[in-house]
Length: 266
Image 1 (cartoon, one colour):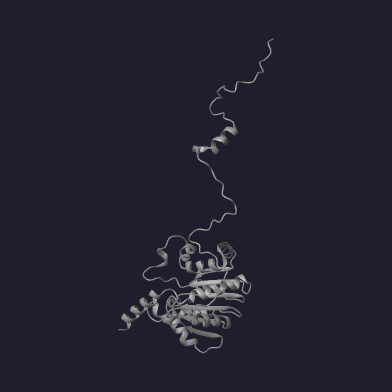
Image 2 (tube, one colour):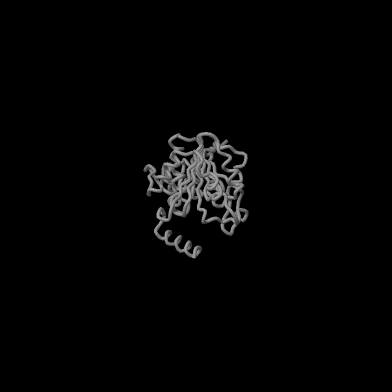
């Protein structure tokens, strides 16, 4: 019987379609379209243009009013920061809270504000409650990222060390020790909301309430103006007022506020 031919198949012999080798498939995928494929270095900086760079500089006051405000927060349990827009009320409080968290002086930051906007309602925004409320805390987020870095902020948000929630969700809670609480845009709280918030204060916590009583978006008396009158002179409470001259956002903001206040008062 004749022996089987074990000679090698000629290299130019055409292989059946659909039975290409794995190596051939890999080569084709590597050279797909003739374009080069680049691999990103795992340690490459992938920060987006929307993320502010982290600052390593210590928090310093830009005005004498800001310096008094920072000192008031350090030495009082409850501090009210009132005054026109652009004076640094929110920035100073949030930056101080971020630095305290980074240095281990506190264990938790709670950020809240009333879900009130001029001419709009929270329900018209897309997404669930967390997604809807996220637009309200974006100013906080930018400051925290600047002081802590984006990765640290996301980590602390996931693990509950930075908590952001609507003011309505504060009912029933107690602000415990080693907690820094910031209520922003407090001029949009009702009197009952402000009472509910202030009665959450526990021992050894730090609470800052910011707002401008002249820019309230609600009808009738607001909780910020009412609380200032009620709590004035109490031990452990400081009411710090910023003036027009303390605006640091821009010179134009001063003139804008002057024009609006002149029209309202004339």
